[in-house]
Length: 118
Image (cartoon, rainbow, N blue to C red; front, side, top):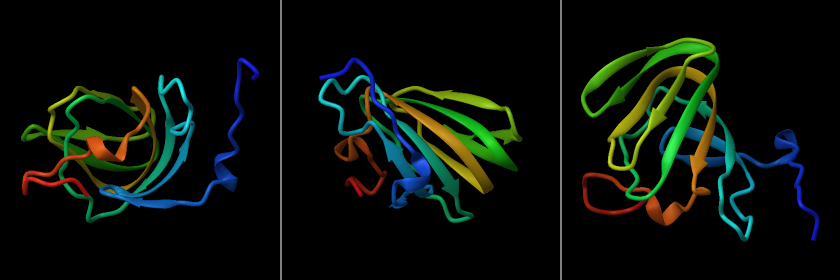
C-alpha cells in the first residue's frame, strides 16, 4: 500500500449532514488519522457536538456566523475555527467550508441534545 492517497472531492457524491451537505475524503482510511470535507452550509444547520473528534472549519466562500457553546462568532472567507470535543456548534448562513475532523470523521460520534445520534 502506498504512503499517500489522493481524493478528487468534485467526484465524491455529497452526503447530507447536520450542516447541509458534505463531500468527505479519507474518512474510510484504516489509520483514521483525519479526514477532509468540503461542506456547503445551509441556512438550517443543526446544533450538534462530538465526544471524541476535534474539527477545524476553514471558510472558503460566503458569510455568516457560528454558534459555539452559545457564543456567536462571525464568519467570512479565510476564517478558521478550531472546535474541541464537547463544544455544541452550528454554522449559520450560506457558506462553503473545508472541515478537517481529527481523528477521521465517525458518524457514531455526532451527537444532539435530544440524546441521539443522527
